[in-house]
Length: 424
Ligand code: GUN
Ligand code: ZN
Image 1 (cartoon, rainbow, N blue to C red):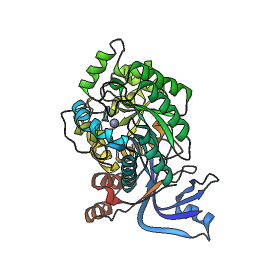
Image 2 (cartoon, rainbow, N blue to C red):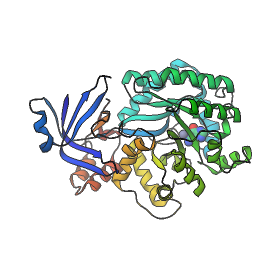
Image 3 (cartoon, helix red, strand yellow):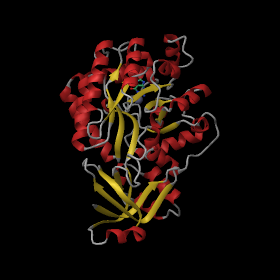
Image 4 (cartoon, rainbow, N blue to C red):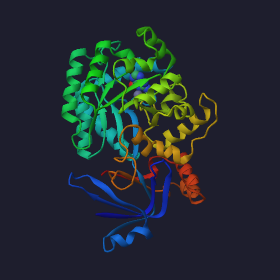
């Protein structure tokens, strides 16, 4: 049993942030070797139950749930900051040429190791990760995650058409490889597999059909893809699938929408698309830094809430510009105020934080597993150091409420605020 004493942030099941200035967190390993939260709350209420045990006293620090990034591409670590006139030229000129390098397993392993370091430096303990079309790119990432004991969800990208040599895969082989990777990695330790069609334009009907069949056979495996990000992309999908009701419905027609499916962007939706997300139990990965960088548009938080589908925050590195959850939360705040329903609705600091932790976990089918510090949750957490910079120290010291404290960290925070990321 390990006992921590410091300030503690966690979330109620309705998403309300709970904060103890003088908190207690008790964690212990279960028979599977994973440490889980045994108790969380106020020191004065709980400490008598742990009398005599050594205490990790962390004055001035805040323990909070590890962040969950619902959508990121590890092979695009070196693509961040590549300027382009929108999504399609960005893919063609920077992303596809770079991803072709991941046919080399040693190169993939070296990038995977850097990528994991960067996630942890930024407080991200779980990420839904795209690899490349090369099966070895999955082995590289999963091996690295396993060595670090991290809960990661990842998959081999499927892209058998409209893709250049070096990243294009073969329909039948890609499905054989996907099934082999599911069997090799899904459920091994804390690892999960995601069937990962890149996006509708780069998969043949046969590949999408095969992916849907695998999704039906392996029900607890995840699905991840991109949808409704950019107007040129949407026009292209309409040409390729003239009979489909919408871009999103292409995925539904191939059996790729269900619980545990996570679609990045979901910007240019209509009411029927939003209802379909809700009815299928699919989740959106909202990627504000990417959507602003590539001028893709604004996710509509108000309409998503009105329709009632789940979503969480994501970096979408390398379309996104930062590994830091603080950058993502801040830009989500901007997007929430500017969104196309023009409601000027502000996302509260607690909601922004929830959407990158417990809310993301709920949307993706990991509620009660990660993203929170309630009893039973796996003990992935960050130790925040609000004195990390003179300005954060000064500003957080003047916070008069939890909202003010969280917002000061969202606006001013970066990797320096993360003193340590602790993995269960
Ligand atoms: N759509 C298809 N591939 C990608 C990608 O790598 N990044 C983003 N942002 N959108 C995509
Ligand atoms: Zn993406």
